[in-house]
Length: 243
Image (cartoon, rainbow, N blue to C red; front, side, top):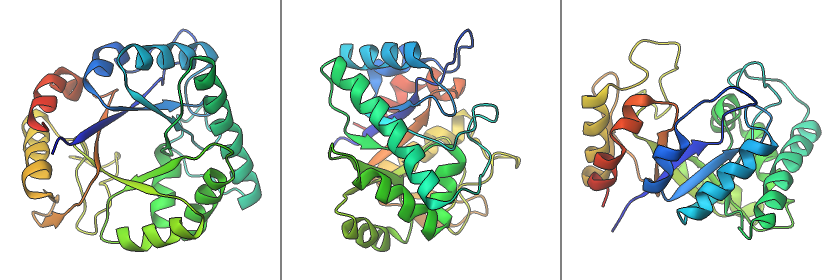
């Protein structure tokens, strides 16, 4: 079975260009589009949606904490009601802009610190799930494939949600299934290790952690980061490996 490939895109802002969206889009199945709170702006969002439409790529919202200055990579302590409303706002913006282009939003994948906090903190995860459940448009939640996947499915089911589990092809893993922090050496794989991890995920459904442990990873989709020039340069090779 062909493995799906997703990418976080639309992360430019005003005159600043980040990522290589046009090079990536032809080779992926799902685009997670920034909603303006960590990156992206109305023009970037619209252009990214049109690019996805041109290449028949499914689209989803990529919301974050309201942290444009920090690119959404700083954890923020927010009351649940505020976080839920913030996510409602971002998701609704993408749903509406997608509809303008005759596209239907399929999923939500939180960005950066919000994603990491969601995976570690049940209260944050519940707020994210509630925000998605409140959307008038049915959407799935993308979160990291971990040994707690069955628990996460049960949590999502309580909100009437389905989840999609993802693994990362260009990030190094800790033994507990979390990602090695970007602040640490070796957090981002070089070309050789990245391609090895793609093959291992597809063929063995596992990754080798930073400490050398083989960790089982049952993922529905694999994530490639559009701001990783090594990954983008190898995207045709990666696409071939996951077929």
